[in-house]
Amino acid sequence: MNQVKVGVIGVGRMGQRHCRVYSTLRNAQLVGVSDANIDGGRKVAAEYDVPFFRNVEDLLDNVDAVSLATPTPLHFDLAMRCIEHGVHVLIEKPLADSLEQATKLTEAAERSGLVVQVGHIERFNPVFVELQNVLDDIKPIVVNMRRLSPYLGSNTDVDVVLDLMIHDIDLALALGGGMPTKVNAYGLTAFSGVIDHAVVQLEFADGLLISMTASRITEQKVRALEITALDAYLEGDLMDKSISVHRRTTTEYQAYNHRGVKYHQESVVERIYVPMVEPLVQELQHFLDAINKGEASVVPARDGLQALQLADQIRNLISAEMVDASPKAQVESAPAPLEAIFA
Image (cartoon, rainbow, N blue to C red):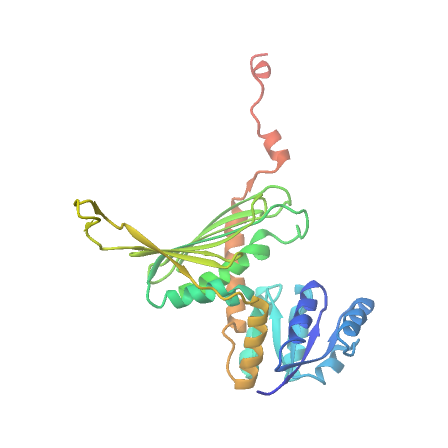
């Protein structure tokens, strides 16, 4: 097992998580960090006893691979510089801030032969991993995903499709094996002026139906994935890491005791073992393994591009007929009082 020399570009909240994980992996050697915030970058570098590089080029000259955890508008330029330096790169989602840049970046990644992985971390959630294993023996016909959160008042410049639903878009494309053939999307704004709640229905070539709901105006936090098959129903909770499989039985009525009492077992519930592993650890370990083995990542740049393409289609469909459920709109659309009508 070769040690991969890694760096982290962008050491805000997510970048610091990457530093923490890399420092614990045996086949990774964290050799430096870089950030536009010099004071913050130096503080993180000191915490992990590695150099701080003000110049990204100097960092790229000293590493085999980097995690790119900067704000999205910087992804394209920095990722292209990594590729030009022959450095493998993991780019936090989304891949880029426009489809044009994402397309160019994907094409460059595929020409390079480097491992260019997109940080769609839910692919490495142990619940999703185990559900895929179960689906080896079960053909899904309907999938329902719910990703709900309360309104926190932050990150309101990014709509809920790119903020939250993008995770489930990636999972849907993985389950569907490609882009859907039909897309319906509905949504509303409540507090931010952009899409705060979205409901999407996808149909794939093989008939698979996937519905997704993403919200940041729901008081209860939910991360659920439910799958219906002809002979089973699967429930996965991506937060508490649990999976239940409900199966129909074919058991006829059986004798319960010598008095002839009979019973019928209508269904059985199986609890699938889910290992308690951190998705980010699995994601970064996969990135390092792909580099060492010379293999493509399971979340290549093209997957990130397709997720952005579908997200853009969804956002355009919603924006064309978005409902305004804001408090101001509710007041303005309230019916006039009777005394005003009959005055």
